[in-house]
Length: 377
Image (cartoon, rainbow, N blue to C red):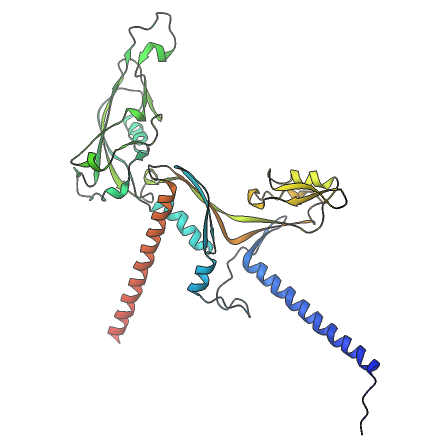
């Protein structure tokens, strides 16, 4: 009959087995953490960037199911408005790929339609500004009008209709001010109407346009020209609906940009003289100072969002190994500034509708292609 081995002989073997299992789990955990960081973080190094490519597609990594799942996307996707007013808006879009984020930006710039001056008919221009320069300046003046109320004008239509054209005019003449003192040298005192502003542009309603809209420049103080006595500008203009991809004057935004959410990790405690030095390496409000349990000043991250990612900290040998800088790949901080009469949130909504329309059109083309292939077979 076989006797059991003494317990004290089995303990070292068990410890060795536990040690192997622990090492294996540690390696697996480290590997998974490294893969997760590659998938979700863009790393800022001293001289370069790492993990800049999108890799969360099927087959990239074993153990990860990156197949498209609408329920997973809905649960992860979020939009958070940070600030908004009539002209500017900042919001976070979380849980999307960079290609989709950039699509929204490009559509905002180039494919949301607006109204802008397209035709300029010069009846008289005795100012020092050439006719072509004057027409160009007038075309770039943003108009406060909702382009959704109008149709695109046909290319062969020379006159335009109330549904697709706005008529405007600018008629101004500079004269001497008879009540100005003889020793006056200030043009504002000596002359009348010596500065032509966008507020001098007058809208002439066509048809029933006055019932549905009110048209005027977004800003009344855009300087168009400077005149002297005897100078006169008499022009009529037509504004039509257009897209920013055809001409920049139709772009509805002054800026439409995004950046990735910064992430700052302190790899070790930073105390003493290094605290102030670390704080000076980042934008104001990023690094804070607190009293730790040892009554020492210790640095901590207040708001990584406010950082401009200058990587100044890597220039300090005593700090560069204590800080890790990265960006969250699927967290986009958008800034949108409207240049027309529509609020920025309306422009963002319109860009989403346009992208949805593009997707539907693409799906229809795929279906048609499949039908044609089936017919040929």
